[in-house]
Image 1 (cartoon, rainbow, N blue to C red):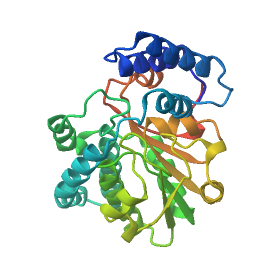
Image 2 (image 1 turned 45 degrees about the vertical axis):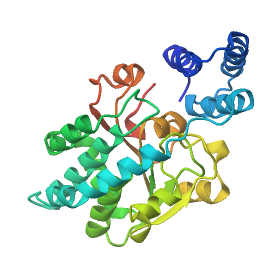
Image 3 (image 1 turned 120 degrees about the vertical axis):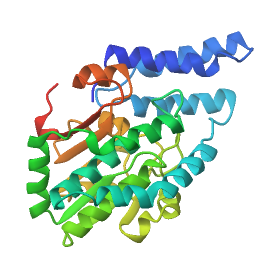
Amino acid sequence: MKLSAMCIRCLMDRQEERIRGMADEDKKAAFLKEVAGIIASAKEDDSAPCLVYHINEVYMRMFGEVMSYEKEKKEFNTLMLELEGQIDEDIHEGKDGKEILKNAVNYARIGNYIDFGALNSVEKDQLLELLHKAREEEVDGHVFTMFLKDLETAGELVYLLDNCGEIVADKLLIKVIKEQYPDIHITAVARGMAVLNDAVLEDAEEVGLTEIAEVIGNGNGVAGTQINMLSREAKETLEKADIIISKGQGNFETIHGCGWNIYYLFLCKCLWFTERFGMERLKGVFINEKNLVE
């Protein structure tokens, strides 16, 4: 996805906020000049998450390690595991297979709220409220029909993971797909190294996702799926997929426009996304790559 003026401004604002409390004004100014240079020299296919990856390299050189989200990751993995049984029951209260699958899509999409990269704070009460209303959310009927048709013929499905906690809801959607389409081979792709509160292979193991699907890392620490930085294994896995489910704004920003058969599933959490999709904040998107226009 091409950088918009809004994304560029957000990148600068977030980096200034990051260093605002530091005392060395000269060092802060030097950092922001380098940030501006990275943005100014961005290539056509450099997404915001890719630029943040390079900005973090500068930050670590000048200020030391970036903030760790290990505490938050553990906290929300634990919370969602505690809720897993009830969510699974709610999903399977659907009157038929289609409604059960739709419920699972809705819960997986709501899980995308747990995003410390896009949101200044992630509130447990807000998450619980969103989960309580998950089954009431709408799913685009045309896109859902396309999704069902693709599942009927698919042999390989790739599921691009996003955040910790959220991956418990992803596990339940994958579980439903496996129940209804047992011949589909499913590979979930996690981040290759720690970034924000995004899920890595160890998180997938912690929540039991590795027990029901093959899980691989993508080979890098970009908070998305930057194609030119993927490991050979991850890229080949995506290239042979009949259907891809892409979770989260970061994955959308990095992979949109590639032409693969991708179903994007996320909540709109920032101004650009709410305007781009004509959605209220924290409302959900479920759309196929073929239906998207710039």
